[in-house]
Length: 217
Image 1 (cartoon, rainbow, N blue to C red):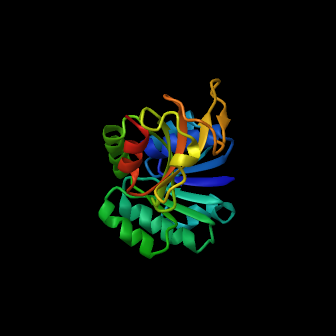
Image 2 (cartoon, rainbow, N blue to C red):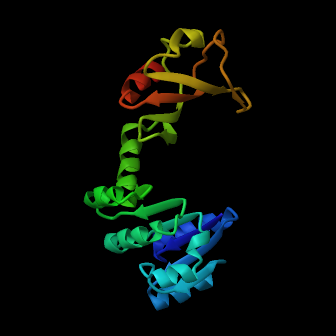
């Protein structure tokens, strides 16, 4: 894939580095000349000095061929303007970083595919570490409608029961478990639950506490 990133700050550099390691073709745009030189020395990517809110510069970066355009600067207005400009080139995926959560609605109103707030995401992750110390989040589905979590069964009330006795329900379903060697398995309905067993659970939004009480001590 060909991906254009606007912004050579910490977020943009980190993202570019991860994508390069993943084998993606990256062009990074940065309007600070000193930072631009630094990023060019660090990354195995084309780094262009200029303003991503310029149609001419975007065309020099071959915006027409891009599969993704990602605006990562700390300036919401610049990110919004660049994304609006990019829309006319029919780029399949446009993603924008927003520093002020109050600006998210403006981005969505102009049709930006995905709006990401690193600050909000970091706060949400910290909150989960505090409220869910024994559950590891694997992914979120839809618009936060459900989560897939790794949990460990420690509630003696369900130890010795069969999986079909506790799942599926309207709130959650256990979608996998692991054998003694750590190999993933799909739990058969008659399989007996053991204490300390690690399971992967699909949980509907708002039901984590109920599921945690059911599975954990």
